[in-house]
Image (cartoon, rainbow, N blue to C red; front, top):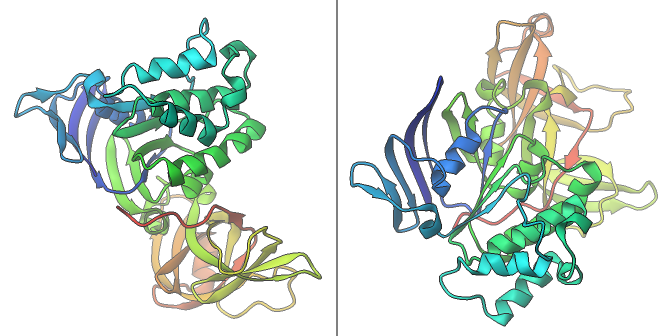
Length: 364
């Protein structure tokens, strides 16, 4: 459990953030400059809040009123930054060993082997950082942080400096880390695909404040948070299960809240749980079921909420059953012409679906 309630002023920027999470991976999500990195720097002991408190499990690491402010080294929090910060003059093995210097107890040979195996960095141990790819550097940085035997990990935009290829290379290792390392993670990102794949709890940060905190699916489905979550580029994150495969057409049928979505063949067995990202800009609404279209994915539901901004668009939340919600961003003109209102039955035409990993873990 991490419990944060802090206030901090940095020049003209004011941070006033509160959230609690017991999830294995909690994602701090929001635009650049929203305050995400400021929050994790305060949690990690790199910035001192002017007031408030921070607890990690049963340990109070900061409490202004009680005069508690554990130094960064004593907090037992591992850090993985965007730029990795490996020592260039040291080999990979020496960089890993440096992390062990800050552990409560020296890592055992068994622990070392487990971390090296988890991140597949055994063959890299004799090399220096200059000879590594961006993805390899980040894997070593994660290994160094794990060998501290941390109570928690802070990962601050760890993939932001990687291109698409390197990002795809390291994401499977982050999957394994979140599933096998059993260390709570605060994951900072403004990339929704990373959040969908890795996190179970989303903390939405905007202008130094936490606008919402809760399960990723619930926060992303809220129409009133459309601007903060990215507008047309954001969307709904849905829990789903593979229902079966159509081998003749190389397609996979996926169950979403009792309805079916068809996607290109997914390499997983029926019954496998996963997440889908359906972006608001990829959802078209109709008041009757569309016919004669090449697009095959149409979900029925009813309008739960409508948020109308000052611009050309309205954000519509559609309840498709089973607690699942889609978001659609349509023009205000289209909304008026269709005479859409809260409670109306609608059909959502899905133009594109992004596939995420399996639905992660329940909260601890």
